[in-house]
Image (cartoon, rainbow, N blue to C red; front, side, top):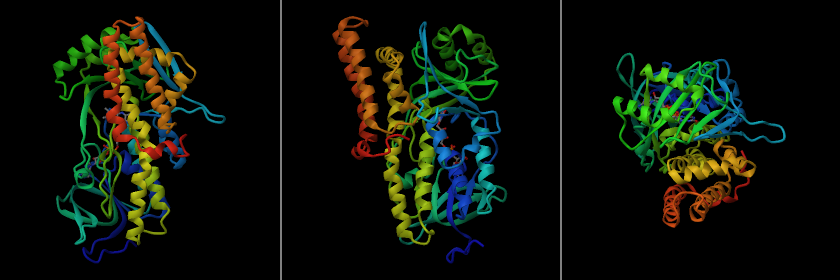
Length: 461
Ligand SMILES: Cc1cc2nc3c(=O)[nH]c(=O)nc-3n(C[C@H](O)[C@H](O)[C@H](O)COP(=O)(O)OP(=O)(O)OC[C@H]3O[C@@H](n4cnc5c(N)ncnc54)[C@H](O)[C@@H]3O)c2cc1C
């Protein structure tokens, strides 16, 4: 029996999870089987066709394994991904994900909607979880400003109801209505992704993510089922493209740079006109500590999706928060609960520093005419020049020193080419690159780097 909250005469849960999306459903699947009483609420549990969260980097797959949730990746035609293929003009090469003595790490391409339904079904199997349908409208606070639950409008009856819980996990996604109550976060739109599905398209390198660096802005693709490939095309700027702009962008800035092998697939897909557009946000985490509530997922932190790092960060956070909560004997000590939330916010910086910096730094580099030539050449060298960066991109390496080292090497390579005349430009362009490099890395380093992260022991996943 779930206890009753004496003030509201409603059931009192250990945890109320707002938003059964990737973050909310996964933490429910992790905690509910361990005896924690959970209420989970979402406004819509139907399966969606989304263009987000379709490539899991090895870091995300490994974290699922650590939480014993890797079975959630099976049974819906998800695809293994073994590394990346990079294309620039007529040059191309592949980089394999890292391996250690007993594991060849791999990522997974999948339909986000199918994956999410699988996670939800798994979580809802537990007898400790209560599923609620509705839109959360308000946080409930007591006289000491401690958050004690939420108010919501029930989907069927349209009645206003409340949920009482010792902890509210706010995981209401990138358009979160509640991050303003629990953080000082400010989101900025970096660009947009235009998403298309290519059907029965034979990729130049099957089971690989493909990155194309010849066009004015980058585009990427990867398998999401045995017959489908997701193509994501970057559209720079802060204003969403209109239908006509999308067509013009693709015709002029993408099609001329598509390798002949799959040009027909792309043309067929464009003809269906089935484009989906999503904004790409950058939002460093600036949580405000409030008793009784915590932020999780995109409500707390976002980065450019070019590296597919979102779910690596989400699952890192789910595991960290989950483990802190599981370390408590019960949820009856509000002071201990608050300590655990504080520890989660501190620990997650270290876990996600590289994922966050890498995403926006790489997007900056790939959108810069000089730096993108240099990064392609640098990665093509192989050895540490590709093993280091891929370990960062895949979310396996948490050491910020490694990231800074490779970023500086790429910048130096670019500058030396410009100065020695190998690139087109000379000194003035080289100075421009120094400025661009600084403008890319400085705000990210300022927002994301914590001095202590350099000294943490678990730099490897
Ligand atoms: C274009 C794009 C591509 C991406 N590609 C990748 C990728 O390939 N790999 C990767 O790892 N990451 C990727 N990401 C990032 C990744 O998708 C997100 O980090 C992840 O989905 C965040 O999960 P979430 O649970 O925080 O949010 P969501 O999954 O959006 O879940 C939020 C949930 O909250 C519910 N909700 C919201 N408000 C309320 C309310 N008031 N009341 C009740 N319910 C509510 C919603 O219905 C929803 O179910 C991409 C992002 C973008 C924008």
